[in-house]
Length: 358
Image 1 (cartoon, rainbow, N blue to C red):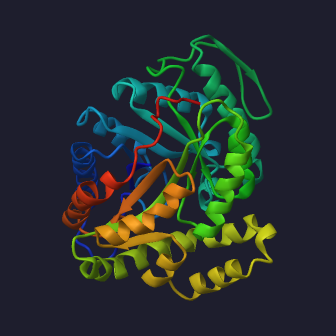
Image 2: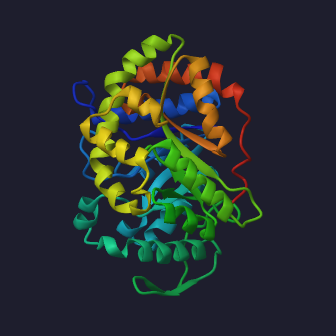
Image 3: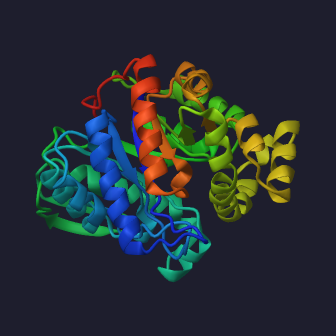
């Protein structure tokens, strides 16, 4: 299981943190992550989410990171394809792959925020068909031949899309995976899946099992899991620091995603634990609740190592560590990164290399 970094570029209330300092801190953490042996650094793309995420143009931050690092892989998690024209996306992917020297990982997805769809003038009910067409065009661009495509949403005629990616045949492709259907779609499209801390681990584990059963490609399936993580030598101090920080982060996350999850999961209506989870999240987030549902990991190195074993056992190949949930001072985040690298990462065998492309 690889250990990756995951960043939202958050500006929590109550902290004297400017956007300039948040961006500088994130880039410095990526540099430190490379020195400590983290496998990849992922940035999200969100729009109009003041406080929770100021990462609206992650490709620019990744471009900057590509010039400050040499080994760590750089991930875009994810590009909401319905909000972008696929020709622009293909050009951005190739440019980033060139700048990073072939270290790019690309996640795609539908996005989940109605406000984003409304602002960019796209109907949410078209999200799946737009993603399918956009992905077809992006994959065609990797062939280094003029691209012709005629779909319901996008058309192009013999376009020579440049520049070209460095990696062969192309950067590893992933998709954000929330609904059960997306896991099956990802297996058909031969994409890695990026699961997030949107729902209880028992549900994610079930989705992962279905994804692995549906996988038919010769290369091993790639499974990423994002987890809020704070590991310090003093476990009690870690829990004390994480209590309010994680509460803020997950409250913001669930405020945006719970209404969507309720629509996505009619097949889980009869599962008692899910009903309890929904009600508890609406009442209020606590660190104990997040720990019980396997959505956050906090403690000393021994505690964190033991809690992370369940993800490895389920087949997670990339643990996307939201160290400090993006809500703590960068000095605490850096301290935790060092603790993870020193005491936790050595206990896990690295996953199959990302050179296995899909």
